Amino acid sequence: MFVAMSIQTIYNLVDAIWVAGKGEAALSAVGFFFPFTMLLMSISTGLGIGGGAVISQAIGAKDAKKADSAAAHTLIIMLILAVMMTIPLFIFAEPLYRLMGATSSIQETLGYSRVMFAGIVLIFFTQVGMSLLRSEGDANKVMIGMIIGCVLNIGLDPIFIYKFHVGIGRGIASASIGLGLGVAGAAYATVISIAVSSLLLFYWLFIQRKTYLAIHFSGFRFNSAIIKRITAIGVPTMLMQMSMSLMMFGVTSIITRISGDAGVAVFSTGWRVVQVATLPILGIGAAVTAVAGAAYGARAFDKLSVAKNYALKIGAGLELVLGAVTFIFAPYITRVFTWSAETAHLVDDIATMLRYLCFGYPATAIGMLTSSFFQGVGKGLYSLVITITRTLLIAIPVAAILGIAFGMGMNGVYLGFLIAGWTASLFALVWSQAFIRGLRRSPGPSSIAAKAGIEAEKQGKPSET
Image 1 (spheres, rainbow, N blue to C red):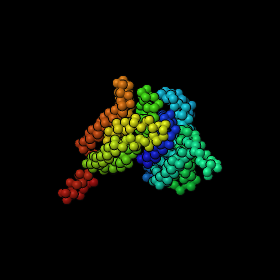
Image 2 (cartoon, rainbow, N blue to C red):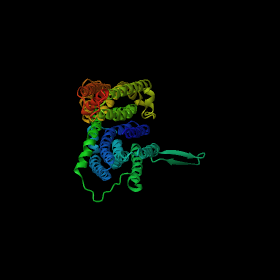
Image 3 (tube, rainbow, N blue to C red):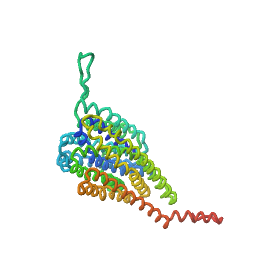
Image 4 (tube, one colour):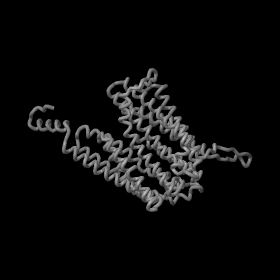
């Protein structure tokens, strides 16, 4: 998941950097699509995690038939979901964007979005295919596929977005390089890059077949037990990420009321920087989930507490440093995304946003790592509650109240994010401490048995355990 989110962030960054040369409307178009990006990622990642977990469990139980069946189920469900998402989004794209408040950039937004919507099946297959390979421990192929797609996207973006006129000799002749498709070209470059990654995954899974999984669809029939298991594991993750998408839909609508399409360009560009700053926490979070799961399974509650607190100190400390760097260098970071004359006027606004939101970096670390801790101990519902509290119950209402009702404009939206982040993170921190105290007061059977064994050994008696 860490690698997937990292590569997706790089895709978004590259698109924003190259699109900046086409002006404010082009940046707004990418910004309006951003909530849909998060929505598609939440569905495909959640399904991939659910299917991958069931496959891993079957492989661990040496049940190859069940593993193959779970993989087939995951892919069939993926195709159904892709169709269910593609058709309505493609048809109702314009009213959806108008509902969000898109005005002057509506045509650029539609041009970019419809290409991306047409590639939903490729986006879904890439995420699910990577999860299938990851579930059998083949992380190298996953990394290769993602890196190839990312590098290709970086190279194709300028070719599809711009048309360069190059002189040959001293005025002898000139040639045009590039397709000049504008912001829609960025979407074509992204979809083609994802398609190449998809072809690699397809080759490894269905043609080369040097994998543990042997996926077949002949005579396929749905198995309700497998479907329930996939959804039971995948849906909580899906809902957690989907709440982020819903928050972005709501905040985008608030911003258009305050600053129009220009505000969306500012916010979506600044948010990409915030995402990069929090990427290290995803890696630490993955470690926290694994360590917390092991300590919880061993009923080693002191180690559980130490691991959580150690991760929080490292994560919050790292984000504090990154926040300071962001605050100091905000104008210079911003110029990466506003390098053209058409977007240079956005520098101050984006820098202001970064200087507000960088104060929330440590809170993000606390919230994400505490959620990872709860996932590790099998309390995914707790993580979901924390995420929904931050995104839907606090961020959207407070941003609307401060930004619109109190007339604070974009600064009110940024303050809303800070209040939501710190409130939810402190709530999560207190909850996690109370959870560990509860475990210590009522130890499980394995802990009691272990203590009995230690006492027996001290007395020189054989242990019953």
